[in-house]
Length: 325
Image 1 (cartoon, rainbow, N blue to C red):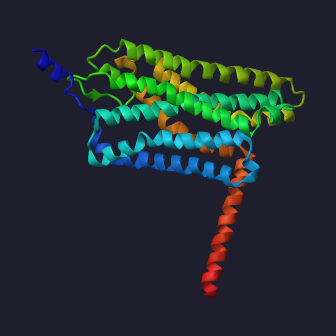
Image 2 (image 1 turned 45 degrees about the vertical axis):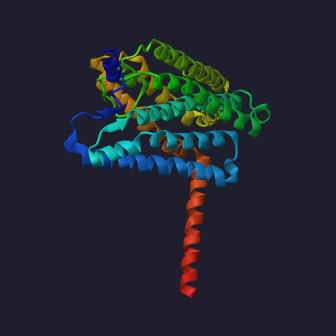
Image 3 (image 1 turned 90 degrees about the vertical axis):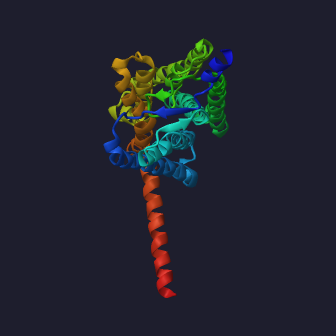
């Protein structure tokens, strides 16, 4: 009897991701939609990385943070979208237990890292606006690299502990995940083991990952807005606010959608709404970020024009050489 029960507890090694439910007739449309989102996200974010790498004028802490954020979000989206696109084509919604745990691990690691990176960017804007005379000393290249490294290390350490606990869980007869990717809560709900330790660890991890970074971000912008309001001229206030408005927009969208997903009750009533906001911070925010930063930032627009012009000059030169040959 015990052997039979143990076999039942270890039988499930494959999950089914329901995704967007029974929308089989819309698979082609959904494939094209999410393929477009993925291509725009990758090209936009990688373009920002290239601009910061090759334009000397963008070798400042603010743009180094931006390049790291863009690279992070390219990876972030790539943990979910390729598998989802494949499922639209093959109609295969299955994912192995190992694959599910790995997807959860990489996604949540990148999400935790982004929380710390956004907090570091908020601190950078605080120093630039509230401590302009000390900015170059306090936020040098070494400090910038240190903050990025610490963000990655903390994100990795926090989530690795959580992943190890999830990998120890047993899964019985329930194998359907009502989501479009393997997130912690939908996975743990299917376990037939005692999940108290894993859920407690998740609460502690979320508290360490989200709460301090959110408070740092809010505190930074309270000081920033207070300082901006003290500037006597309207032009001066507009100029100061323009240097942080892009980041404030990104932070508001990211934390707003994140809180809706993880703070709203996970009941049947909010299930579909939860998926909508999950879409917002997993796909739409990474896609929108390059547009938010480039459209609101003169230096990025100028660097982009310069890159396009150099590419055009190179193309014209190559055509001339071909004609001469």
